[in-house]
Image: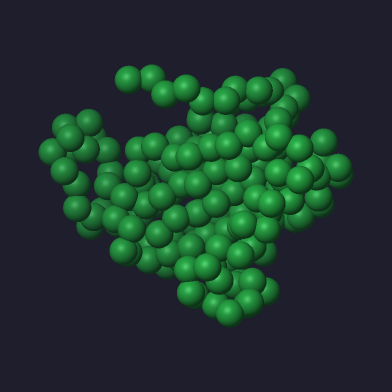
Length: 160
């Protein structure tokens, strides 16, 4: 089955990427490995990170792609696989994942949203900043240490 995804070159997208086993805190335990995977992919397939937050079981990101590129799918595939290769294999895997040689770290799919305008951009940045508060990990967004590792926030107009 092929999923319809937005594919507008040079645009800004919001993403939600989930772990397969949502109750485990693997992402925070290995945030440096995730950072390294993102950095490696950015070197080979450039993109701008407008906002990024890592939580124990999922992450949210806003990226702006180069003007001649709309392929965020390859970037996520490489980030997820790069991270997975560096983690000890101890997760549960169902028969389907085993038969396809897949790890059981990430959900196969992720959610993306094409950012429509400055207001939409600001709402999604606010959502990313508030997400750790919403999930009860902290009381104020400024307390969450897993923003600063990825993001240099420049605002909507400064990255377009």
